[in-house]
Image (tube, rainbow, N blue to C red; front, side, top):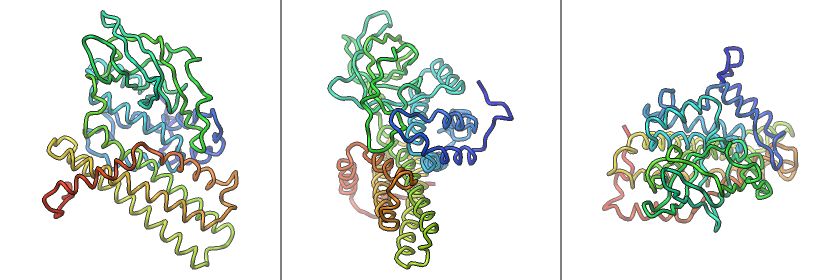
Length: 378
């Protein structure tokens, strides 16, 4: 259903409502139902579709990153799920056939929530070829953010077929999956409790060619796979902005604004976050300039890895400064800082941080000179 004129929200109003309700959904098993309704009513659930303002073809990645940051500032669990929705729609734009795009983009407009679930353990997902364009899934995915509410997840599965090998993306109709397949006991985290990142067992679910997305191993195609790190980094930077906002509010509340040490800490947090904003701006520009230039794929990936790494450092430093500024009183429930601190600590644990850092150094050392390593994007 589409929102009526009376129901439409401005994005700013949606962000305020999400931030105001963030504490109310901070418990295990929660999901931000109303939050995604507010995002729909503000037009943000479809804003990256091909005919919308932040479509990839319009080369406005920097603006998309600012949007992701704003959602993350309002609520990191909402930001995590929303980023997955944006990621899934991009994968469909990149790899789906025209009939598939029409169907899935229509579903995105009709309130279906998309996501990307790739993480798995030893009991990972296999795709059995039954012949005649029919397939059966077997196995589980973990950390499925939004499970039980994401109705069109993109998952990856290992082919079991004489004709096909590799990782196959599928867009699944979750209404065909039994409710008992979702293991809600799996998710007992320090933070990000409302992201509903459960374990899901897809065993027995049968699909057809219509649900297969792209060729085998398309999910890992560069620069789209690793280059997408700038999106979750943007959400994380939103969390750092929320940390600054909470610390700023508490220092005013306890009348510590004249303390020069507090002033120094807030100054450092402010310039760190503004540095992160500049990184997002440049990462967005360079992504738009290089993403369709195969000769610049390595350069783009190195820059995305730098952006991810720098923003992680910014977030960690801002949390440390906030802790020193407000002390233990800021880390007691239901203080906003306590919740955001937990959520950001959890969300920063992204895969392979050491490999990401060494990949940057490897790229730099492959160059003949360090002169103009990152030339300006046009």
